[in-house]
Amino acid sequence: MEPHSNNPSPAIPDIPLQLAGQPTIGGLAAPWTTGRTPDGRYRFGAVDLDRHNRAMNEKLCQTCGTTLDTRLVFAMRDSDLRSLTSHEPAMHPVCAAYAATACPMLAGRMIHYRATSLAGQLADLGVSSHGDPTDTRAGSAAEPWQLVWASGYRVYTHPRTKLLAAMVLPEQILRVRRIGDNPRQGGEQRPDCSIDPSESETPR
Ligand SMILES: [Zn+2]
Image 1 (cartoon, rainbow, N blue to C red):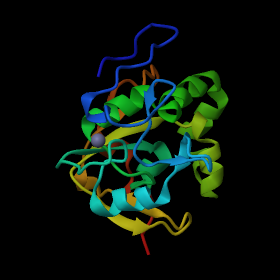
Image 2: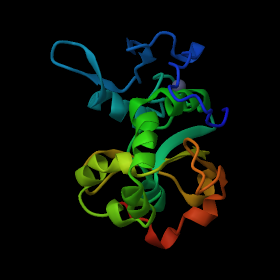
Image 3: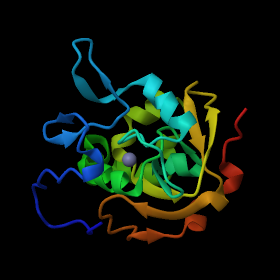
Image 4: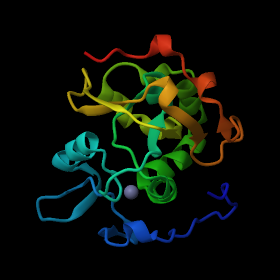
């Protein structure tokens, strides 16, 4: 993926072939796990729980809904990475690259993150990453996200959210790259620099 450009108003990215069949919202392909409103419209941020569970259990891509390959990609916040847990299903690398550019949550929260430096600093310190998961979700606009390449994952029911989550073991993590252009952190990170396995949550 190209590094962040200086274009102040990023254009709507081209939809990759893999996602050509997906419904679109405002020119953006909606992820396969996107939920619908009661009147049948897809809404970003809403989750189709049945598809969420199927994607987790059957190792399907949350973006295009087809079977994942041997290399899969998660979008994870710093707090997710510390607990080695993704609350969202994995993606194909090409689908993840699209999501990082197009997804209103992934792309939009980077803008918010830059605009709220104090919140960003707190997020860097992990201050906002503990406690109620809905709290964390609400504050996620301020927390940086990573694309995490992995060779596999294990499904478990997260004790707090009671939803299926993916646990990635340190040895399954192939690469970690921060989404967007963050001058304080640079691009590539070595996974073992950002993970302390002693902090990881144990699934029950
Ligand atoms: Zn996909």
